[in-house]
Image 1: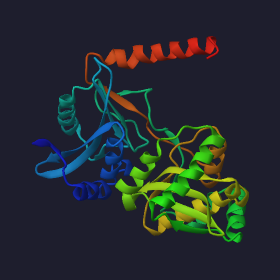
Image 2: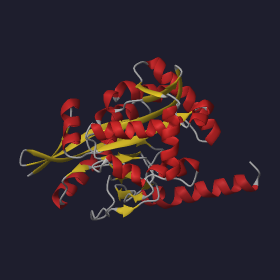
Image 3: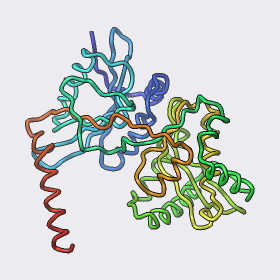
Image 4: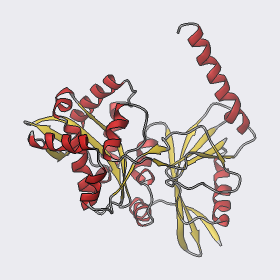
Length: 325
């Protein structure tokens, strides 16, 4: 007998995620952040013979009629899943009246659930780099590039100190640096409230590390963490931090902190072909390729979502380029 139950207790949910090797994007607080910014969050448990064997934090986002909504499970589900469990879970998802459900599992192997297909509609990057923290410090250092080790020593000699953000004002200082970083690198940001919500709603599971030089914040690194995975969310540095190579010392400090806490893996959260990727690969030269995004059709309108809308979007973008807009 398999039941799909709705979790209502945050502490029990987070304990299950942590004890079963679940990803930090499945933590209750992350769902609360997304719920405050356009999504709805529900936590579903797979219960077999009275024992919880798996679960998924399901995020729902409203779409235009007739698509109704999209379901998304970031870096999940977690736990043990057999075919009867998947079937029961899919039946429960039918209650949402959604066009499809998108999952991006925390695994490198193929998702072999019947009826699920690879999807181009990814949210997270499948190409990443993962440091295995169960290895020795000496082995981790040996994997680094020579330049990375040199820059870590250089920034350490400058007298940079690292502390945890403790107040909203600390987070605001980090966000000022992040805005500077985004302008320099040309990427978009969420609202200030989004980041403050992460700090407040995820709490200790998402520590913000601040690198200071002569009392001034010059760089920050912000992961989200379970006993299994430390997953980088955000990071940045200002011009002074760049000249001091503060990001090298800061990242190595955070990695060592995660290792001391017993975290097993450190995931840099995606690789692109840019300068940030070169920096990340200086620490972790070997790439990891996650299995990527998979989708399950939940509505007869699915072909419209899967094929026609992406084509229309591509056509509009092409016309804008031709028109010089």
